[in-house]
Length: 321
Image (cartoon, rainbow, N blue to C red; front, side, top):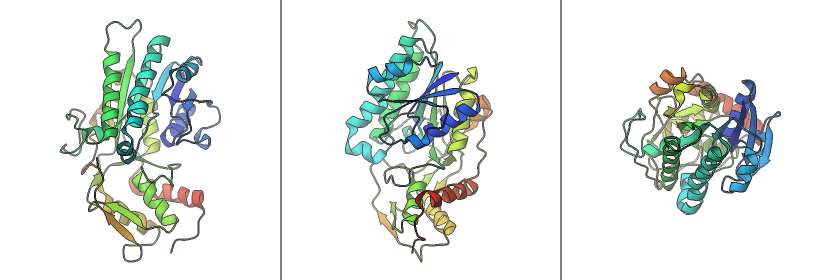
């Protein structure tokens, strides 16, 4: 298949392209490189510089006749969403509408959408099943939930000339090689690792007992590709995580320990909680197991050391004091 990957030069998008190539598909990447990098785009991929906010640039990508679309382009920082909500709305919601309109106009019948665990908000049980009522508490989460509803409501339209089969993946905290070590707005594990490699203090918001579910990007990519031509996934909203809660404090301690450090030897600075921050987060993944036969295969302790080994080579800085 020829698969259009919006945001394919990003951290997750680049891994999706690799997984598609390994499965014999041809990725077509549309990315404006605002946060992505050409270094993430593997050889054998068709690359187009473009923005999902621009319908003409999306149309040019569809000129390459994709059989399916993996729509992962988005503004993914909760903190930035509060600084400028209009960007989130334009990229995450309007951008998704633009992609949907192109799918309808060109008769593309398969769309996979990158949703987010943030739409569950606070008060949800952990692990959280997909049947939990959304309660988004950040502007980012609102735009992702709105986009998700546009995707599924559009697919349910009776007036479509050709069918549109959609799947939304509510992804939890994705980490892994090639995640940006210099982005202070997203990816708490990458942020902590970058801090240590540069000898900077680690900043923890709130008391650090808030929990997250860390899932390796290779497991994420495998789930997306397995759903591509799988009718069992059509029309479904599916969690992708591990079901394991880890506190931010535990993550901090584990990351420090991987460098032979601890809280007595390294500077940890606590700050007030951030707007839109979730207290607990873990995925109920039974739906992914049942529909896709998918199971995360990379334990966090192994994935963590793989990431740190990669990060050391990526930064090549002196050993932090």
